[in-house]
Length: 80
Image 1: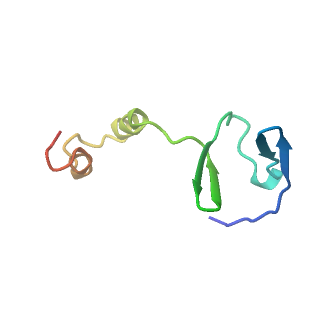
Image 2: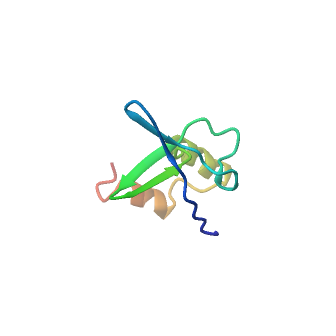
């Protein structure tokens, strides 16, 4: 995956800030919301993470057995 960097202007509208994402960094047209994370002075934008239900559906489609060690790891040592 290639790393891209761009400098963009920060636009102010009362108490909010906005920026324009350059076309070469834009999200697909079907993305209508983003998840934003801030660590120090780094802000990361990404498509919202899939739910665990979506993961379980994908696992079912891939025919991953319920007793796969990965699922045991997710349940933790108590098996709850």
